[in-house]
Length: 390
Image (cartoon, rainbow, N blue to C red; front, side, top):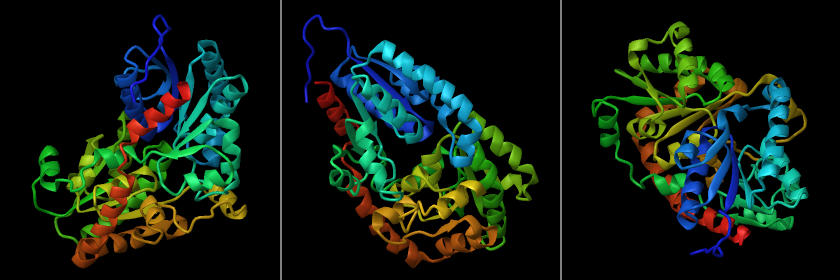
């Protein structure tokens, strides 16, 4: 598509709002693809370092929205409400041609609905997990977004059932990650020996996740070290704040610090370099699958949040990790809440380290899902936004 603007037209204004690291990555790809179509376009809103590098004016940093779970949101609610009020008024004053909310549905959908009621065009990039939670959310999406851009193929049919315009664009990570990642090159990049067992550990990117998950993960790794000789652990920190939190939790863990390499970012390189990945659920599970690495998903949410979710019967999916959801079956272990213990995690990790046949059987399943998601997502998302502007 080669869109044009009438001579003398003011520069196109595109507002975006991304929360946390994964949204920042998606937003950066979208900004870059849109800038190819409209070199003089102006981009502004909420984003992270990658969106800034792509040329967006960030009025607030994405980390200000990185709050997970009902209990955590309640604790930050006054601050988030103040931020939302100021942000939406600034958007209205700026009058963008289109607003793109990237993920962060608890924040973005309210912004989109408010803007749409005032005549602005709105796009929501990354569907909320309507396949996992109550499908009635899909029906309400049309009140907020003129268009929903979906990363996964099972989502548009759900929206179509409720008369909401939705498009499957694929996932940018599937475009970016090689079908056959180079483990040796990744280890060289990280300064690691080519041989030796390596575990990549990703306890999450939010402070609450790290505090809950890292001690459990480290104890599981300590147990695993007694069974897997010369085991080394890589922990990529999503940002300086995460690194500081992780560093503070390492000494009392009981796990030899000499066997842990704490990285600044480089999560994808850590996964590719590793033999097995231990992670909290979320986008990291999808990334590990695209890197073709066997994984164990261990996750705990705040007890209050868990009681609310269970008590109201909100979860409708049999699986929580994306590899299992996309496959429609349990390809990788999910150890959640009371099952997320060091002993159970260590046992599941040991299975992947020692059972070569199980690892080999996993590879073609991961490759098939990778091909399904490889759709030039940023380009297709940009096309959809351009169509909305035109």
